[in-house]
Amino acid sequence: MDLTSRLIAVASIVSLAAAGSPGFALGQDSTTWDRARTGTLVADSSDSVGLSAKRPAEATADPGNGDPWFTRRDAFGAGIAILATVAVAPLDRPISGEFRELRWRKDEKLRSASQVLAFGGGPGPFILGAGFYAMGKVAGSQRLASAGAHITEAVLLAAGVTAIGKGVAGRALPGINTKEQFEWGRGFHHGNGPFVAFPSGHTAAAFALAATLTGEAADWHPGLQRYVGPVSYLTATGVGLARLYQNVHWASDLPLAAAIGTWAGATIESREHAGHRRKVIERIAEATSIARAVNGRTMVSWSLPLTIPGGGY
Image 1 (cartoon, rainbow, N blue to C red):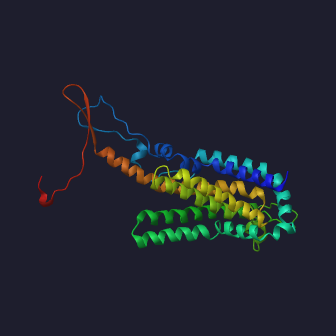
Image 2 (spheres, rainbow, N blue to C red):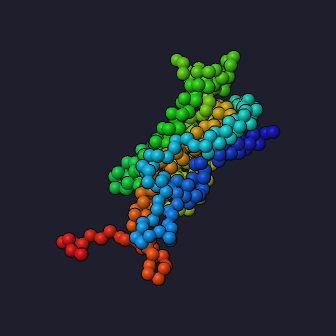
Image 3 (cartoon, rainbow, N blue to C red):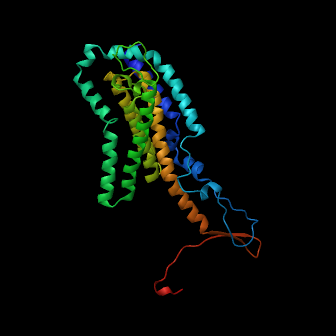
């Protein structure tokens, strides 16, 4: 298997690990996600006159704040990511050894491209989040400012989880001579720089950004996520491959990082936007009345708030 085939295999497995997270579902089908998060309004035509439409218990809960941080779907995604890590592990040393060859190190185009992509998993997401937030505040756009805040929150969450993972795993970076590749808790020790390979922080941050951008696109305009999602996730995969070229990560450092980042972005998006949607549904339900007419038919009516100057009717 040549290097190109190996990288394609790694990219495919990383994408599979990310696809196991609910962030992919969030980006691809926002309607399904809305139904799952907000529930369905129920109206019974046999109810008595003037009874308002019923709402499910979850719609009356504290908006957004009641969403779980980790679900069974997330656990399933984590399982897929672990299996993907095991599957790609045999490619670790062949890919790392190939990229250490001088012909790859001298390729200026690849070096420049890897630096640009790596920036997208380092300071890039933080700069983008801060930029969106600042532009939103200056332009008076709360939606843009919120998007910036959500990006920053998601990347920070992904960074926090990967930092814990790095500390616990204590995996040595490529090129580091050590008796053990993994050592429990070594990543928390002083001078831990060479032992923080697993999972990849840059990859996690890039996938957190991708999941958040996809979720924001779905919230801004239905259907827009179909274009933003593939570009965002493809770029995030490129960030991970760039870190392989820079020889600072093993291929098996990427799948779990992709899953962590996608989970972080999807979690922030669901907790932030689910509350907004619940509020909208609650307002619609509160303004809805179902009544039995004289002829036996069921009538559904909506009332709109109306304020008349001077307090008249």
